[in-house]
Amino acid sequence: MFAALVILGAIAGSALASPNVSPVGYNDLFKRISSGCSTSGPASCHNTTRETDLCCFEAPGGLLLQTQFWDTDPSTGPSNSWTIHGLWPDNCDGTFSENCDPSRDYTDIAGLLQAQGASDTLSFMEEFWVDINGQNEQFWEHEWSTHGTCYSTLKPSCLPSGSPKGAEAVAFFQTVVKLFQTLPTYEFLSQAGITPSSSKTYTLTTLTNALKDATGVTPALNCDGSNLNEIEWYFNVKGSLIDGEFVAIDAPSKGSCKSSGIKYPPKSGSSTTTSVSAAVLSRPREPSGSLPSAGTIHASTTGGLLTAGTWSTQTLATYHFSGSASSFTMTTSKGNCGVSSGKLTCGSGVSSSTFSAVTSGSNLLLAYQGSTDFSSDATPSGTDQETVYTGTSHSKTYTLNIISS
Picture 1 (cartoon, one colour):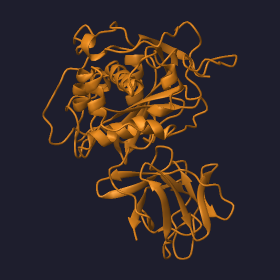
Picture 2 (cartoon, one colour):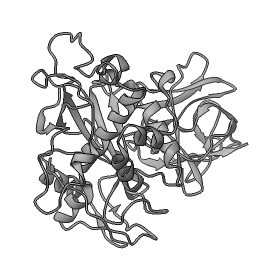
Picture 3 (spheres, one colour):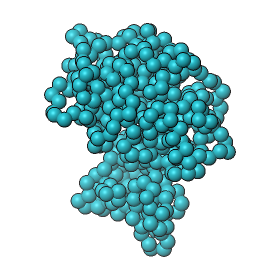
Picture 4 (spheres, one colour):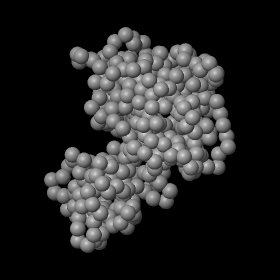
């Protein structure tokens, strides 16, 4: 179990403000309901006995990821701030559930926030929780339906009597915004002399040490190729997500960035700067590209995937995709495709794994558990077929591009 290194005060509180920057309208920004839960009990994932009141103890999704983007092309948000991706409830062992209650897949999130007195929260989201292609409403709806509905402490039955419909979603967005305001990643890096540059590169150790010096914990960093583009801050929570105490912890695993040669490019086409309250203490990007029903999968270096899920330079197989770009399964003529012990295979008797697709420029990249990196022991040639592994643990690394048939 991960050691708690830093404890944030109750998320509804107004302490922890930076001495340099004033908080952004806390009194109005967080007009929120109260859970009525104590924060004196164990943090999520740290209980020694079975917890029965899951309105006041987050389970099974007690490993929380506050994820942020650094979008540069096109750029989103202020040029001196990362932006919000979401807050995800992973299970304590790192597995996760999604889309837990379709009956609460609320639409018109902006209208819901305005109707329940959270207009200032909405204004903040419109600047700091933005979609790379301008589809903010769809982005917010996705984050709520995919992740927000999976919190045990946000079930409607856990809310105070008389709460309006959707109050738990309003509380979710308020909590995510408030937590994000305690994590000014740009400022943390800047304090260590690390600022966006078109020419500099960094080691993973340099970046994570700077962030740990600022916060006391080590986050996970994700890269698109060599470019730093996402960070995952990990927490457990005491009490309810609505107004509990967030306990910062080290990331249980590192992200997709390699050990060196990491670029932190400036945002393009954005000159806006802003002030963010700076209280000192992942998964694939929700893509905007549409997922084809069938297509071939091409490696970024050479060749692509055959029917068994192997890498080859022979004629590529047709893959069939079922689901949406944010969550889908794949099949070939041989059967289901899945990942077991880090190895991709397709065939009869294979248990299906859930994949996602990440938009990168004009490409739609295959992703597994938040990473678009795949690797093999050698580059295929002729009739050779190489086993495909997730991650970068093997000598030949590449990405896989989905091309519609």
